[in-house]
Length: 504
Ligand SMILES: Cc1cc2nc3c(=O)[nH]c(=O)nc-3n(C[C@H](O)[C@H](O)[C@H](O)COP(=O)(O)OP(=O)(O)OC[C@H]3O[C@@H](n4cnc5c(N)ncnc54)[C@H](O)[C@@H]3O)c2cc1C
Image 1: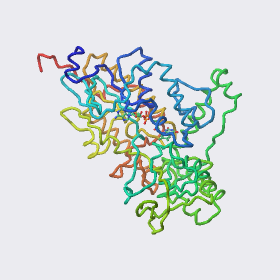
Image 2: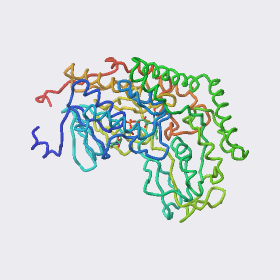
Image 3: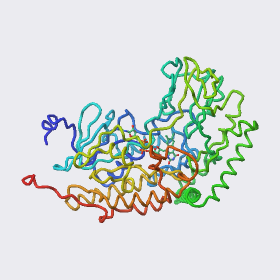
Image 4: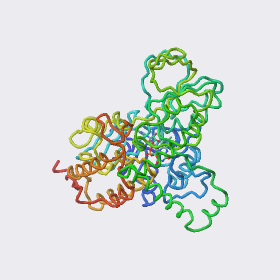
C-alpha cells in the first residue's frame, strides 16, 4: 500500500509489530526486536514521555519494593543503583537510558492512545485506532498497556461540592503546596504507605482513611556503599551473584503464600513486632493490626509508616466515609474532619483495565465483553483464544506478590518473539491458541490459586475480579513460568494459513 492509499484508508503506518506502551513491557519487547536486528515495528504511547509506572508515579517517597538489582532487566544490569530499593527518579532514568542506548525513540509514536483494534482475517493484520482516529496496521499486536496504570478513584458521596484540592497518587499535583495544610489520605496501600511518611511532617493535620490495615514488613533498604558499586562494576560476576541470591531469596517467599502457612506466621510475628515497637496507643495498635492472613493482600514494606502514624498531627479513621462537604469529610461514625486537600491512594483499575478498549478478534468477537462476562481468560497470560497474533505482556495472572515482574515480562517477551518466529518461518498468516490449551491452563492456574492465601486468607483484594476470581496473580514459582514460556509449544497452537486472494 502506498502512502496515498494508506492516507485514503486512514492508515498512518503499516509495519510488522505494533507494540502499545513504553513501560518495562513495551520497552522490553522493543529492545529484543532491536537485538534480533529488526526495525519493522512501532510503539504507540499515549503520553508524551516513556516510562509507564515510573513516569506517572512521581509522588514523594515513590520507590520499588523489590530490590533494584532484581527489579531491572537481566540483560541490562545497572551497577550504579544508589540504594537497594531505588526511587522513582532513578528507575525512570534507567528506562530513559535504555531508550537512548537502543535508539528506541524513532520507533515511538507519542501522544497516540490505542482505543481499539480489529483483526482482519482476510489480510491477516491488526488495524489499531488511536484516540484521534488515526490507524496503524501490523501483523502482530503486542499490548504492554500496564496492569497498574488507570487510577482507581472511588466515588465519594458529595465530592462534587468539595472546594479543596484533590488528586490521585499517580497524578501527584506538585504545584500544590501541602505545607501547613489539613490533608486527607484515602487508602493505605502500597503507594500511600510510601508517601504518608513523606508528607506527615509537612502538613498541619493528616487524616488517614483506612478500609483494611495492610501487613507491613520492615524494608531492608539502605544506600549501596561506593566500594560495592565499584565491585559491581569491576569484579566480573559480582552483580550477577547478588542478583541470583536475591532471586532465590524472593522466590522462597511464595512458599508461604501457597501451602506453607508456618512461614507466614513467622513473618506475621515480625510485622506485629513492628506495630508494637512504634505504636504505643492500644486503640491505634488495634486499628493497625490486620485480621486476615498475611499475603492475602499485597504484603508491604516500610520502616517509616508506623512512626508517621504515631505522630500527634496524624489520625487514622477506620469508620469509612459517609460523605464529603465543601471543606470536610464526614466519616461513617458521623465525625466531621476539616480538610484542605484529598489525596487518593486508592490504587488502580486492574481486572477491569481493558473494559474501555474495543479489541475485536475473529468473527467480530469483543474481548472486553468476553472478559467482562467470563473473566480475563488467557493462555499463559499472553495469548487469547479467538484473537490470533495478539499478545499481552504482564497480562492476566502474571502479576506477583513475591518477586520482580520484570522477570515475568522478560519470559513473555521471549515467548512472543518465539511465536512471531514460528509464524514467519512457517509462512503462515497467524498463530491461534487452541481453546483446549487455554482451558487446560485456566483450570490448572485456578486450581492452584484456590489453595493459596489469596483466596483462603480471609480478605478481599484488587487481585480478585467482580466474581471473586483471582485474575491477577501467578500462583507459584516464577521459574516454573520461565520454564513454561521458554518456547511456544506448537501443539497448543494452530497455524492459520494464508487464504489466496483468488479464493476469498
Ligand atoms: C508505585 C508503583 C510501584 C511498583 N513497584 C513495583 C516493584 O517494586 N516491583 C514490581 O515487580 N512491580 C512493581 N510495580 C508494578 C509495575 O507496574 C510493574 O513493575 C511495571 O512497571 C509494569 O510495566 P508495564 O510496562 O507492563 O506497564 P506500565 O509501566 O504501566 O506502562 C504502560 C504504558 O502503556 C501506556 N498505555 C497504556 N494504555 C495505553 C493505550 N491504550 N495506548 C497507548 N499507550 C498506552 C502508558 O501510558 C504507559 O506508558 C509497581 C507499580 C506501582 C504503581
